[in-house]
Length: 115
Image (spheres, rainbow, N blue to C red):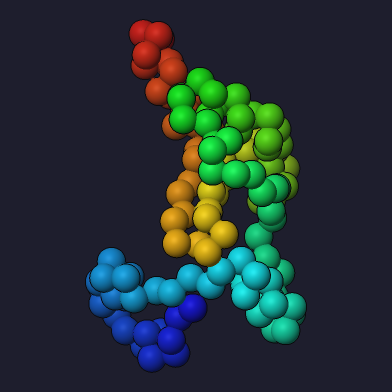
């Protein structure tokens, strides 16, 4: 949630505001209710899994990403081959948010193998 007064700040001040924890994130249930009330489409959700099932090894995460998201569901250009960028992992309360990028895991594995 972004307060209206924040929108009039300079980009540098907005950056500082965010870095200092100014931006609030709604829990998933509240976000869903708000999106329905306001008629706003949410980003794609591909599923819910317990944190204990999120892969912790590079190879496992690369395989997990390839399995969970074989193609993108939000291609901006058809000539890109619908290759997915990655997925965003969030706790239900949205207290922790991270992006797992397929390309990052592939690069890490190539570096590890010396290719």
